[in-house]
Image (cartoon, rainbow, N blue to C red; front, side, top):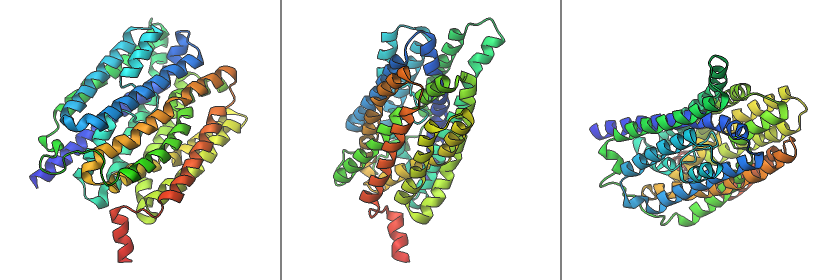
Length: 409
């Protein structure tokens, strides 16, 4: 009983760090484009910064997956928190473009509201050990909910710099730099929480993390399919979606942040619906049947003539688009051996980060030449392709709990 209680406590702590990162990622993703534009940089240069952030995250995640088994999980997580502090501090204190690009590449800052960081493969590999297989998807739903809900709160908080400017003598650039200072403080907070993790996170004597073995072929196939989804997602990372809203409808950071708050709240609560649906129809069908309609709403948001209809489409999309997140993570962790989970998390997440890295360059270039929502249309088409491929290739490969249910009926 004691071991189980320790693992449950560690699960709570890991979920808490996801919430901390979600909040600051949500804030940064809304203000990043506006801040760089305020410094005089073009939409294309905004895309360069976003691209290098995603490439850097992919490289760090890949290194974690390939060499993480040589270090303790605590060391990796604490080093990540230290890097998070340095990243935020640098963005808060310099405006030199090349320095921002360099630190964005080597640091942990996330231009999207979702988690694409070095922390992800470690946390994803640890969390399943805290619950039975039958509760795994629900546990990942809670993890996704906390991340999405805190990310939504962060998007809402992105309006605070404008409020401060109107009620003080601070200029707007200084107020926006405060967001990055808060990001640095969040690095200190996660360092403190990770320091409190129990020795049980190392799983001594149970499942020592190993490179991919028997599951290698299937994990590589999943990584390729997931990359198509991420390729589409790169055109609509939250920093660029916010930038599109600024330019297409002349929105302020405060209004855009409020809109993204509500879309984030919808995404957060949809995680719990995802777990319920998955128990009834299975993980793969849950991923496809919720994600595909969301892409139709995304494409529609680019085509409608006014802000009201665009908001309606984006909110409707947010009710569906994130349901595949806990199901996807649960599926990957279920179909590999426990010792392969850290490597599987990295191998499936790294290509996603790489695939999502280049589209921001194209999206920034498109927005420099037109405010029409071409990035949204391209994203929707690519993501719909991912849904169809996923259903066709993996609908008959079931996780253990679905196999048991099938045998008992």
